[in-house]
Length: 412
Image (cartoon, rainbow, N blue to C red; front, side):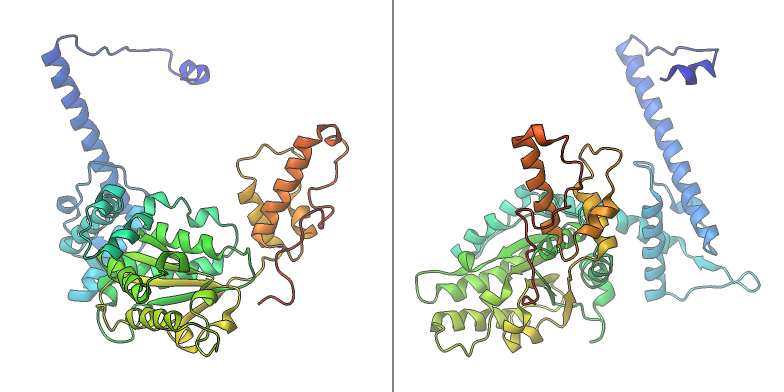
């Protein structure tokens, strides 16, 4: 404890734990019980305060709220009330008393919100471990070979916080992907509310499309399946289609899951190419048949996320199955500053480093270009330390210093 704090409390009482084992055990139980009571009381006050601020109330709040195993954050309280509202709106009308016009939540709805939050926070972590993935029953050798390539959400290691800028794209992905994967019951009625099964991320190279796909799987608690030609191609005629079918059947078993196809134009390009092999066309057809839901259930939480920097090379049938297409463009100066702050967040920087000036000097640079440029200059300083003092100019004072931009006007 800090000396300044101890000065504020001149009188000190030291409490020592009992030496007897029986008394020590009872003492620890009493301490644990007191901690649980304090946590439950604090959580009750947080939920009550949140309801009051937003014009809501719950008549039997004391009997319902008994969360004593952890401290609820403001974000958790927000989710609990949101889940409770959606549950009550779905099955019961909202009661609004006369003059106050306050929304009255039932205790059943609030209990549903608390239980749902606990199941979401505990469930995906248990299901997403390597041990549980190994316990998946595979139907054939093709699913068995693909299973080791599945990455659980807690091992992906990329979140939205790791991506500087792209706020609009991240917000759209949260609405299109995360909500249907986390709350499938809200999208089970009607045709218009069916979740989107395919999203295309397109834009210049190095703008963060692959990182976005990984972050989506992490944030949504979904298993990540990265598909490429090397993972589904086979030298034996007809096995490629079986691998494609196994991708979707395996994704269904371990759902929620995200099937990610990077550089999708190379795998699902136009089929009218005269030089294309028949086996390749059959694989494309099999992929689209399984993707379209002819052999999958509507309630399965499986999403196909594709990325490319050549969207016009895609087959028309593939484009139709990607109803939502998000442009991931080169960052402007403010967004380049955000990216630089994320890249250099854990580095020791001098006080006079001006990230805004660096951002203004790097027009046309992608996020990948910025990272490569910083690494090149750092390696230069390590190899030639005597020039450290002379390099007072910003890192990108010479933008073409061994690091040209990865995109150009000809790229789309």
